[in-house]
Length: 446
Image (cartoon, rainbow, N blue to C red; front, side, top):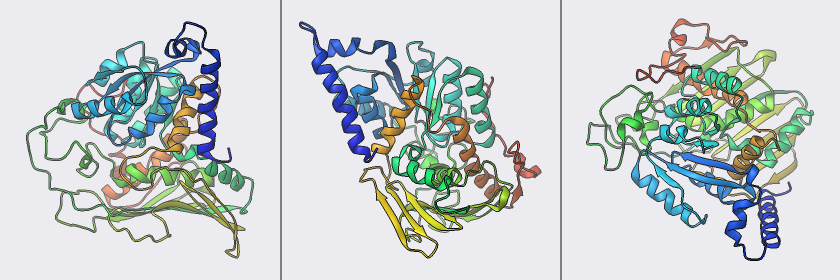
Protein backbone atom coordinates (compact mmCIF):
# COMPACT_ATOMS: atom_id res chain seq x y z
CA UNK A 1 0.00 0.00 0.00
CA UNK A 2 1.81 3.06 -1.25
CA UNK A 3 -0.79 5.38 0.16
CA UNK A 4 -3.51 4.75 2.72
CA UNK A 5 -6.09 6.95 1.10
CA UNK A 6 -5.44 5.47 -2.35
CA UNK A 7 -5.89 2.00 -0.89
CA UNK A 8 -9.26 2.91 0.59
CA UNK A 9 -10.39 4.50 -2.67
CA UNK A 10 -9.52 1.33 -4.57
CA UNK A 11 -11.38 -0.84 -2.07
CA UNK A 12 -14.48 1.37 -2.28
CA UNK A 13 -14.34 1.63 -6.07
CA UNK A 14 -13.99 -2.12 -6.45
CA UNK A 15 -17.01 -2.78 -4.28
CA UNK A 16 -19.04 -0.17 -6.13
CA UNK A 17 -18.15 -1.69 -9.48
CA UNK A 18 -19.36 -5.10 -8.34
CA UNK A 19 -22.64 -3.63 -7.13
CA UNK A 20 -23.27 -1.64 -10.31
CA UNK A 21 -22.48 -4.42 -12.77
CA UNK A 22 -24.11 -7.14 -10.68
CA UNK A 23 -27.55 -5.65 -10.03
CA UNK A 24 -30.13 -7.71 -11.87
CA UNK A 25 -33.16 -6.37 -13.66
CA UNK A 26 -35.96 -5.36 -11.30
CA UNK A 27 -33.75 -5.44 -8.20
CA UNK A 28 -32.76 -2.23 -6.44
CA UNK A 29 -29.14 -1.60 -5.46
CA UNK A 30 -30.21 -1.62 -1.83
CA UNK A 31 -31.90 -5.02 -2.18
CA UNK A 32 -28.91 -6.44 -3.99
CA UNK A 33 -26.55 -5.15 -1.32
CA UNK A 34 -28.56 -7.12 1.22
CA UNK A 35 -27.96 -10.33 -0.72
CA UNK A 36 -24.41 -10.12 -2.05
CA UNK A 37 -21.93 -11.61 0.37
CA UNK A 38 -24.63 -12.37 2.91
CA UNK A 39 -22.69 -15.30 4.32
CA UNK A 40 -19.80 -12.95 5.17
CA UNK A 41 -21.91 -10.09 6.49
CA UNK A 42 -21.14 -9.00 10.04
CA UNK A 43 -23.79 -7.47 12.27
CA UNK A 44 -22.18 -4.74 14.33
CA UNK A 45 -23.01 -2.73 17.44
CA UNK A 46 -21.15 0.32 18.72
CA UNK A 47 -21.18 1.01 22.45
CA UNK A 48 -19.86 4.44 23.39
CA UNK A 49 -20.73 7.20 20.94
CA UNK A 50 -18.51 10.02 22.07
CA UNK A 51 -15.34 11.44 20.60
CA UNK A 52 -14.17 8.22 18.96
CA UNK A 53 -17.34 7.86 16.88
CA UNK A 54 -15.55 9.24 13.82
CA UNK A 55 -13.17 6.28 13.88
CA UNK A 56 -15.99 3.90 12.92
CA UNK A 57 -18.10 5.81 10.44
CA UNK A 58 -15.97 5.15 7.36
CA UNK A 59 -15.18 1.45 7.96
CA UNK A 60 -18.85 0.72 8.64
CA UNK A 61 -20.12 2.80 5.71
CA UNK A 62 -17.72 1.22 3.20
CA UNK A 63 -19.68 -1.24 1.03
CA UNK A 64 -16.61 -3.43 0.88
CA UNK A 65 -16.74 -3.92 4.65
CA UNK A 66 -20.01 -5.83 4.19
CA UNK A 67 -21.33 -5.02 7.65
CA UNK A 68 -24.70 -3.95 8.98
CA UNK A 69 -24.90 -1.56 11.92
CA UNK A 70 -27.54 -3.01 14.24
CA UNK A 71 -27.15 -0.84 17.36
CA UNK A 72 -25.89 2.54 18.46
CA UNK A 73 -25.56 2.37 22.23
CA UNK A 74 -24.69 5.02 24.80
CA UNK A 75 -25.76 5.94 28.31
CA UNK A 76 -26.36 9.54 27.19
CA UNK A 77 -29.38 10.27 25.00
CA UNK A 78 -27.75 13.20 23.21
CA UNK A 79 -24.87 10.95 22.16
CA UNK A 80 -27.29 8.40 20.71
CA UNK A 81 -29.21 11.06 18.83
CA UNK A 82 -26.04 12.62 17.44
CA UNK A 83 -24.66 9.26 16.29
CA UNK A 84 -27.95 8.45 14.55
CA UNK A 85 -27.77 11.77 12.72
CA UNK A 86 -24.17 11.14 11.66
CA UNK A 87 -24.89 7.67 10.30
CA UNK A 88 -28.12 8.74 8.58
CA UNK A 89 -25.93 10.52 6.04
CA UNK A 90 -23.77 7.44 5.44
CA UNK A 91 -26.03 4.38 5.42
CA UNK A 92 -29.48 3.78 3.91
CA UNK A 93 -31.05 2.01 6.89
CA UNK A 94 -31.67 2.89 10.53
CA UNK A 95 -29.86 1.14 13.42
CA UNK A 96 -31.55 0.74 16.78
CA UNK A 97 -30.75 3.22 19.53
CA UNK A 98 -30.10 1.60 22.90
CA UNK A 99 -29.18 2.86 26.34
CA UNK A 100 -28.06 -0.42 27.95
CA UNK A 101 -25.00 -2.24 26.61
CA UNK A 102 -26.19 -5.40 28.33
CA UNK A 103 -29.23 -5.57 26.04
CA UNK A 104 -26.99 -5.15 23.01
CA UNK A 105 -24.68 -7.91 24.19
CA UNK A 106 -27.64 -10.23 24.85
CA UNK A 107 -28.95 -9.90 21.27
CA UNK A 108 -27.87 -13.03 19.35
CA UNK A 109 -28.07 -11.15 16.05
CA UNK A 110 -24.99 -9.09 16.96
CA UNK A 111 -21.72 -10.63 15.79
CA UNK A 112 -19.40 -7.76 16.66
CA UNK A 113 -19.14 -5.22 19.45
CA UNK A 114 -17.10 -2.07 18.98
CA UNK A 115 -16.43 -1.07 22.58
CA UNK A 116 -15.65 2.66 22.80
CA UNK A 117 -17.01 3.21 26.29
CA UNK A 118 -15.01 4.97 29.06
CA UNK A 119 -11.89 3.17 30.31
CA UNK A 120 -13.48 1.41 33.30
CA UNK A 121 -15.99 -0.25 30.93
CA UNK A 122 -13.46 -1.51 28.38
CA UNK A 123 -12.58 -4.86 29.91
CA UNK A 124 -15.95 -5.70 31.55
CA UNK A 125 -17.90 -4.78 28.42
CA UNK A 126 -15.51 -6.85 26.34
CA UNK A 127 -15.56 -10.02 28.40
CA UNK A 128 -19.35 -9.83 28.72
CA UNK A 129 -19.57 -9.70 24.92
CA UNK A 130 -17.03 -12.49 24.42
CA UNK A 131 -19.04 -14.77 26.70
CA UNK A 132 -22.11 -14.32 24.48
CA UNK A 133 -20.14 -15.27 21.36
CA UNK A 134 -19.19 -11.86 20.02
CA UNK A 135 -15.96 -10.61 18.52
CA UNK A 136 -14.80 -7.32 20.04
CA UNK A 137 -12.88 -4.28 18.90
CA UNK A 138 -11.99 -2.65 22.21
CA UNK A 139 -10.55 0.82 22.40
CA UNK A 140 -7.38 1.49 24.32
CA UNK A 141 -6.67 1.05 27.15
CA UNK A 142 -8.02 -2.48 26.95
CA UNK A 143 -7.81 -2.89 30.73
CA UNK A 144 -8.30 -0.43 33.57
CA UNK A 145 -5.74 -2.38 35.60
CA UNK A 146 -3.25 -5.20 35.25
CA UNK A 147 -5.63 -7.97 36.25
CA UNK A 148 -8.12 -6.89 33.59
CA UNK A 149 -5.36 -7.10 30.95
CA UNK A 150 -4.69 -10.68 32.01
CA UNK A 151 -8.37 -11.62 32.23
CA UNK A 152 -9.10 -10.34 28.72
CA UNK A 153 -6.51 -12.71 27.29
CA UNK A 154 -8.00 -15.59 29.29
CA UNK A 155 -11.51 -14.82 28.02
CA UNK A 156 -10.27 -14.61 24.43
CA UNK A 157 -8.44 -17.91 24.70
CA UNK A 158 -11.37 -19.71 26.33
CA UNK A 159 -14.07 -18.50 23.93
CA UNK A 160 -11.86 -18.25 20.82
CA UNK A 161 -13.12 -14.91 19.54
CA UNK A 162 -11.24 -12.20 17.66
CA UNK A 163 -10.44 -9.37 20.06
CA UNK A 164 -8.46 -6.41 18.75
CA UNK A 165 -7.32 -3.35 20.69
CA UNK A 166 -7.77 0.07 19.10
CA UNK A 167 -4.09 1.01 18.90
CA UNK A 168 -4.59 1.95 15.26
CA UNK A 169 -1.00 2.83 14.40
CA UNK A 170 -0.41 -0.93 14.15
CA UNK A 171 -2.29 -0.69 10.85
CA UNK A 172 -0.44 2.32 9.44
CA UNK A 173 1.40 1.09 6.31
CA UNK A 174 4.37 3.37 7.04
CA UNK A 175 4.72 2.03 10.60
CA UNK A 176 4.41 -1.56 9.40
CA UNK A 177 7.09 -0.92 6.78
CA UNK A 178 9.68 0.72 9.04
CA UNK A 179 9.14 -1.60 12.02
CA UNK A 180 9.68 -4.51 9.66
CA UNK A 181 12.93 -2.94 8.49
CA UNK A 182 14.03 -2.37 12.07
CA UNK A 183 13.40 -6.04 12.80
CA UNK A 184 15.57 -6.90 9.78
CA UNK A 185 18.45 -4.82 11.15
CA UNK A 186 18.26 -1.57 9.19
CA UNK A 187 19.55 0.39 12.22
CA UNK A 188 21.55 -2.46 13.73
CA UNK A 189 20.74 -3.75 17.18
CA UNK A 190 17.98 -1.68 18.73
CA UNK A 191 18.50 -0.82 22.37
CA UNK A 192 16.28 2.10 23.31
CA UNK A 193 13.04 3.86 22.41
CA UNK A 194 11.68 7.19 23.59
CA UNK A 195 7.90 7.57 23.29
CA UNK A 196 6.36 10.98 23.87
CA UNK A 197 3.18 13.04 23.93
CA UNK A 198 2.58 16.72 24.58
CA UNK A 199 -0.62 18.73 24.80
CA UNK A 200 -1.92 22.03 26.17
CA UNK A 201 -4.89 20.78 28.16
CA UNK A 202 -6.24 23.56 30.32
CA UNK A 203 -7.77 23.96 33.74
CA UNK A 204 -10.64 21.64 34.66
CA UNK A 205 -13.45 22.36 37.15
CA UNK A 206 -13.26 21.12 40.71
CA UNK A 207 -15.87 18.35 40.81
CA UNK A 208 -18.77 19.14 43.12
CA UNK A 209 -21.91 17.09 43.66
CA UNK A 210 -24.56 18.07 41.13
CA UNK A 211 -27.81 16.82 39.58
CA UNK A 212 -27.40 14.12 36.96
CA UNK A 213 -27.55 15.76 33.50
CA UNK A 214 -30.73 15.25 31.49
CA UNK A 215 -30.57 12.10 29.41
CA UNK A 216 -27.69 10.48 31.31
CA UNK A 217 -28.04 7.03 32.93
CA UNK A 218 -25.52 7.64 35.72
CA UNK A 219 -25.91 4.17 37.20
CA UNK A 220 -25.04 2.56 33.88
CA UNK A 221 -22.18 5.00 33.30
CA UNK A 222 -20.63 3.75 36.53
CA UNK A 223 -21.28 0.13 35.56
CA UNK A 224 -18.53 -1.98 37.15
CA UNK A 225 -17.24 0.88 39.34
CA UNK A 226 -18.39 1.36 42.96
CA UNK A 227 -21.39 3.68 43.20
CA UNK A 228 -21.01 7.33 44.13
CA UNK A 229 -23.04 10.53 43.67
CA UNK A 230 -22.73 12.40 40.39
CA UNK A 231 -20.28 15.30 40.32
CA UNK A 232 -20.36 18.21 37.91
CA UNK A 233 -18.85 17.72 34.44
CA UNK A 234 -17.74 14.15 35.07
CA UNK A 235 -19.47 12.22 32.29
CA UNK A 236 -18.43 14.18 29.21
CA UNK A 237 -14.62 13.90 29.32
CA UNK A 238 -13.25 14.89 32.69
CA UNK A 239 -13.77 11.41 34.09
CA UNK A 240 -10.28 10.91 32.63
CA UNK A 241 -8.78 13.10 35.38
CA UNK A 242 -11.17 12.72 38.32
CA UNK A 243 -9.58 9.90 40.28
CA UNK A 244 -9.09 6.22 39.48
CA UNK A 245 -12.66 4.91 39.44
CA UNK A 246 -13.12 5.59 35.72
CA UNK A 247 -9.93 6.90 34.13
CA UNK A 248 -6.36 5.71 33.68
CA UNK A 249 -4.69 9.16 33.45
CA UNK A 250 -2.88 10.38 30.34
CA UNK A 251 -0.88 7.17 30.19
CA UNK A 252 -4.02 5.15 29.53
CA UNK A 253 -5.49 7.89 27.39
CA UNK A 254 -2.53 8.34 25.05
CA UNK A 255 0.72 6.62 26.10
CA UNK A 256 -0.84 3.32 25.08
CA UNK A 257 -0.27 4.20 21.44
CA UNK A 258 3.38 5.24 21.45
CA UNK A 259 4.47 2.73 24.08
CA UNK A 260 2.96 0.03 21.89
CA UNK A 261 5.06 1.21 18.93
CA UNK A 262 8.17 1.26 21.12
CA UNK A 263 7.56 -2.25 22.42
CA UNK A 264 6.81 -3.51 18.91
CA UNK A 265 10.03 -2.01 17.54
CA UNK A 266 12.22 -3.38 20.33
CA UNK A 267 10.49 -6.80 20.29
CA UNK A 268 10.15 -6.92 24.06
CA UNK A 269 7.33 -8.20 26.23
CA UNK A 270 7.41 -7.51 29.97
CA UNK A 271 9.88 -5.19 31.73
CA UNK A 272 12.16 -6.23 34.58
CA UNK A 273 11.91 -2.90 36.37
CA UNK A 274 9.68 0.19 36.28
CA UNK A 275 10.63 3.65 37.51
CA UNK A 276 8.57 6.85 37.26
CA UNK A 277 8.74 10.51 38.14
CA UNK A 278 5.34 12.10 37.81
CA UNK A 279 3.37 14.92 39.37
CA UNK A 280 0.62 17.45 38.85
CA UNK A 281 2.59 20.52 37.74
CA UNK A 282 -0.06 22.86 36.35
CA UNK A 283 -3.23 24.55 37.70
CA UNK A 284 -2.47 23.05 41.09
CA UNK A 285 -5.84 24.04 42.59
CA UNK A 286 -8.10 22.74 39.83
CA UNK A 287 -10.04 19.48 39.74
CA UNK A 288 -7.36 17.36 38.05
CA UNK A 289 -6.41 14.71 40.62
CA UNK A 290 -3.71 12.76 38.73
CA UNK A 291 -0.29 13.56 37.32
CA UNK A 292 -0.21 15.81 34.28
CA UNK A 293 3.55 15.41 33.78
CA UNK A 294 5.17 11.99 33.61
CA UNK A 295 8.60 10.49 32.92
CA UNK A 296 8.67 6.71 33.04
CA UNK A 297 11.47 4.24 32.37
CA UNK A 298 11.05 0.54 31.62
CA UNK A 299 14.08 -1.75 31.80
CA UNK A 300 13.76 -4.94 29.75
CA UNK A 301 15.89 -8.09 29.52
CA UNK A 302 18.97 -7.71 27.33
CA UNK A 303 19.60 -4.13 28.42
CA UNK A 304 16.80 -2.65 26.30
CA UNK A 305 15.05 0.47 27.60
CA UNK A 306 11.80 2.28 26.81
CA UNK A 307 11.19 5.77 28.13
CA UNK A 308 7.89 7.65 28.22
CA UNK A 309 7.81 11.46 28.25
CA UNK A 310 4.25 12.68 28.73
CA UNK A 311 3.28 16.31 29.17
CA UNK A 312 -0.48 16.84 29.25
CA UNK A 313 -0.48 20.56 29.99
CA UNK A 314 2.82 21.89 28.67
CA UNK A 315 2.81 22.08 24.89
CA UNK A 316 6.54 22.58 24.38
CA UNK A 317 7.44 20.12 21.64
CA UNK A 318 10.67 18.65 22.99
CA UNK A 319 11.07 16.33 20.01
CA UNK A 320 9.65 18.65 17.37
CA UNK A 321 6.18 17.08 17.28
CA UNK A 322 3.20 16.56 19.56
CA UNK A 323 3.55 12.77 19.65
CA UNK A 324 5.73 9.99 18.27
CA UNK A 325 8.42 7.41 18.99
CA UNK A 326 12.18 7.52 18.49
CA UNK A 327 13.98 4.18 18.15
CA UNK A 328 17.74 4.02 18.63
CA UNK A 329 19.97 1.30 17.15
CA UNK A 330 23.69 0.68 16.98
CA UNK A 331 23.76 1.83 13.33
CA UNK A 332 21.07 4.48 13.15
CA UNK A 333 17.85 5.99 14.43
CA UNK A 334 14.20 5.99 13.35
CA UNK A 335 11.57 8.59 14.14
CA UNK A 336 8.02 7.30 13.58
CA UNK A 337 4.62 8.83 14.22
CA UNK A 338 1.08 8.63 12.87
CA UNK A 339 2.09 10.44 9.72
CA UNK A 340 5.07 8.33 8.66
CA UNK A 341 8.75 7.95 9.51
CA UNK A 342 12.27 9.26 9.08
CA UNK A 343 15.29 6.98 8.89
CA UNK A 344 18.71 8.32 9.92
CA UNK A 345 22.17 6.75 9.82
CA UNK A 346 24.51 6.69 12.81
CA UNK A 347 25.96 10.08 11.85
CA UNK A 348 22.49 11.62 12.00
CA UNK A 349 22.05 11.98 8.23
CA UNK A 350 18.52 11.58 6.91
CA UNK A 351 18.52 8.51 4.67
CA UNK A 352 14.85 8.22 3.83
CA UNK A 353 11.54 9.77 4.74
CA UNK A 354 8.04 8.54 4.06
CA UNK A 355 4.93 10.56 4.87
CA UNK A 356 1.42 9.19 4.54
CA UNK A 357 -0.56 12.29 3.74
CA UNK A 358 -3.24 10.80 6.00
CA UNK A 359 -5.70 12.58 8.23
CA UNK A 360 -5.42 10.69 11.52
CA UNK A 361 -5.76 12.96 14.55
CA UNK A 362 -2.65 13.77 16.58
CA UNK A 363 -3.45 15.20 19.99
CA UNK A 364 -6.79 16.78 19.14
CA UNK A 365 -9.87 15.59 21.01
CA UNK A 366 -11.78 12.95 19.16
CA UNK A 367 -10.38 10.72 16.49
CA UNK A 368 -10.81 8.93 13.25
CA UNK A 369 -9.06 8.92 9.93
CA UNK A 370 -7.63 6.54 7.40
CA UNK A 371 -5.40 4.78 9.92
CA UNK A 372 -8.40 3.97 12.14
CA UNK A 373 -10.32 2.81 9.08
CA UNK A 374 -7.55 0.41 8.11
CA UNK A 375 -7.43 -0.96 11.66
CA UNK A 376 -11.17 -1.56 11.92
CA UNK A 377 -11.32 -3.10 8.43
CA UNK A 378 -8.42 -5.38 9.38
CA UNK A 379 -10.45 -6.47 12.42
CA UNK A 380 -13.47 -7.28 10.22
CA UNK A 381 -11.32 -9.30 7.83
CA UNK A 382 -9.62 -11.12 10.71
CA UNK A 383 -13.05 -12.29 11.88
CA UNK A 384 -13.64 -13.69 8.39
CA UNK A 385 -10.23 -15.38 8.44
CA UNK A 386 -9.00 -13.35 5.49
CA UNK A 387 -6.36 -11.36 7.40
CA UNK A 388 -4.38 -11.64 10.61
CA UNK A 389 -5.43 -9.26 13.38
CA UNK A 390 -2.75 -6.60 13.68
CA UNK A 391 -3.28 -6.03 17.38
CA UNK A 392 -4.75 -9.18 18.92
CA UNK A 393 -5.54 -8.81 22.59
CA UNK A 394 -2.55 -10.97 23.51
CA UNK A 395 -0.32 -8.19 22.10
CA UNK A 396 -2.53 -5.30 23.14
CA UNK A 397 -2.60 -6.47 26.75
CA UNK A 398 1.21 -6.55 26.93
CA UNK A 399 1.43 -2.95 25.76
CA UNK A 400 -1.40 -2.01 28.09
CA UNK A 401 0.57 -3.48 30.99
CA UNK A 402 3.08 -0.65 30.54
CA UNK A 403 0.54 2.08 31.15
CA UNK A 404 -0.85 0.24 34.16
CA UNK A 405 2.67 -0.17 35.57
CA UNK A 406 3.12 3.60 35.23
CA UNK A 407 -0.04 4.24 37.21
CA UNK A 408 0.84 1.75 39.93
CA UNK A 409 4.36 3.18 40.37
CA UNK A 410 2.95 6.71 40.54
CA UNK A 411 0.29 5.78 43.06
CA UNK A 412 2.64 3.96 45.45
CA UNK A 413 5.43 6.49 44.96
CA UNK A 414 8.27 4.09 44.31
CA UNK A 415 9.82 1.87 41.62
CA UNK A 416 9.45 -1.89 41.55
CA UNK A 417 10.75 -5.02 39.86
CA UNK A 418 8.55 -7.21 37.67
CA UNK A 419 8.40 -10.93 36.99
CA UNK A 420 8.95 -11.21 33.24
CA UNK A 421 7.01 -14.48 33.12
CA UNK A 422 3.81 -13.50 34.95
CA UNK A 423 3.92 -9.70 34.85
CA UNK A 424 3.33 -9.54 38.58
CA UNK A 425 5.26 -7.02 40.66
CA UNK A 426 7.76 -7.88 43.38
CA UNK A 427 6.30 -5.32 45.74
CA UNK A 428 3.46 -5.80 48.22
CA UNK A 429 2.18 -2.25 47.87
CA UNK A 430 2.21 -2.54 44.08
CA UNK A 431 0.35 -5.84 44.11
CA UNK A 432 -2.46 -4.25 46.13
CA UNK A 433 -3.21 -2.35 42.91
CA UNK A 434 -3.03 -5.41 40.65
CA UNK A 435 -6.82 -5.29 40.35
CA UNK A 436 -9.60 -2.97 41.41
CA UNK A 437 -12.70 -2.86 43.58
CA UNK A 438 -15.87 -3.62 41.61
CA UNK A 439 -19.47 -2.86 42.31
CA UNK A 440 -20.78 -6.19 43.70
CA UNK A 441 -21.79 -8.53 40.92
CA UNK A 442 -19.49 -7.03 38.29
CA UNK A 443 -16.38 -9.11 38.99
CA UNK A 444 -14.99 -11.13 36.05
CA UNK A 445 -16.18 -14.74 35.94
CA UNK A 446 -14.72 -17.02 33.27
